[in-house]
Amino acid sequence: MSVSRWCLLFSTLLMLVGSGSSYAAERGHMPVNKHAQLLQGTWAGAEGEITFAAHNIVIYKGKRYLGAIASGTIQLSKKRSTRMIPYRITDDKLILTVDGKQAVYSRKL
View 1 (tube, one colour):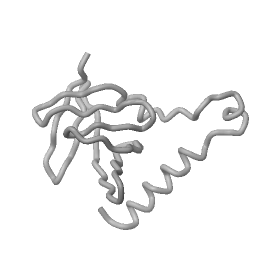
View 2 (cartoon, one colour):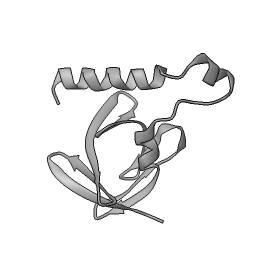
View 3 (cartoon, helix red, strand yellow):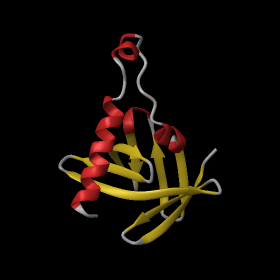
View 4 (spheres, one colour):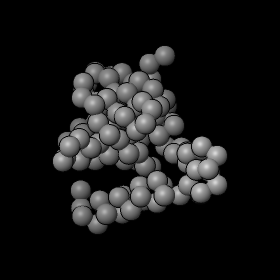
């Protein structure tokens, strides 16, 4: 991923986090990330499961990460490493592109 694309995604994520008003904070409301809401829950596929839980926690391939979700990109962070995974949702399937290969997941009920 190019540096400019990473910077653009990072700045977009910062704007999403900082977009809540003081009024919302006073009332105990957090800004809503519609992309994160769309992915919320557990998805299963041939590669295993991926879970998008509360408080930006993502469990991917059995490991727990801090996740940030924007349109088309999932950012997974753990300690000092960060991984960007492109995604799309088509016909109720979550499709991740990892190392140039597509992994297809279906939502678990």
